[in-house]
Amino acid sequence: MKKALKILIVIIILGLLGWVLWFFKENNSKSAVLYKTNTAFITTIEKKSVATGKITPEDETNIKPQISGIIAEILVEEGNFVKAGDLLARIKIIPDEKSLNSAQGRVKIAELNLGNIKRDYNRNKKLLDKGVIAIQNFNSIELDYNQAVQELENAHSDYKIIKVGSANSSTSANTNIRSTVTGTILEIPVKVGHQVIESNNFNEGTTIASIADLNKMIFEGNVDEAEVGKLKEGTLLDVKIGAIEGVIYKARLNFVAPKGTEDEGAVLFKIKAALTLNDSTYVRAGYSANAELILDKRIDILAVKESLIQYDRKTEKPFLEIETGEQVFEKRDVKLGISDGINVEILSGINETDKIKVWNKASKEDNNK
Image (tube, rainbow, N blue to C red; front, side, top):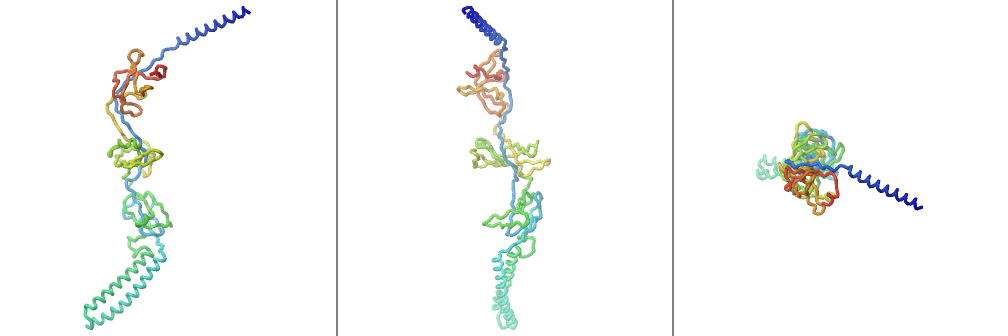
């Protein structure tokens, strides 16, 4: 038993010795970690913000009828170019029975009144010719007669307007819907047979057509409250339209909303910018677009790659590791400026000749800094 125990102890000792030798061999065979270095450089950094929005006409006009009725005819189509005064549609009047009956009654009363005054007028005209009455007396009777004639004409006109929408067949009839501006028809929301309501002080009326000048387009979007304070009217924007690839349009900011609106917890401010169009592409109203706004810009500044920046775990201050000897680095606090997400401005702490450690592996030493 003692002999077997001795043999077992020898085997265990030899095993431990073999493991120790293997461990040292493996560790000694590993090559040292070599860190690459980089340097600062002079560049220009722009801090940008992206606003999402759409392309809309600068001015869009809704054409509305001056009288209620039913669409009898539409003479244009969406996309047509029209000039101010062009005929767009015609309306068929469906008169109100009560108003029509009242107008008919007014015509009859005017006819009866005129017949009575006319008999008196003719009788006094004969007396005037014979010299029986004075001219002053006849003038008053003649005035009554002329007023009665005019009243009958007015009654007939009112009756026609209620019945057919116009007192005559002139081109300015209320049933003829004409364009008030020059531009392209964007939308015709009604069809033949649709009932429409006139525009008045109590009702905005039914839109017959929407017309806009597509040569004057604007970008309309929203920016976050954190960035709106840096915007100035007159700033140039780069606008990219999703439907038109490879083309960047210039736009000049001309409006920043004085009041924001809350959207899903964020406060957004509306902006508008006049778009500069070109002849090679056709921009349609309603295109979705993104606009890049330059919030800040630094020219010819000292910068490094932002990936080189490290932060102290305790103070959270930024620092770089600068090479002082062969693969020997020292911590150097730096002050940062503007960043575009790739490069960051160095305000103080290093110069162009300093070699900066490219930290690619986390170590116990790095974690304790």
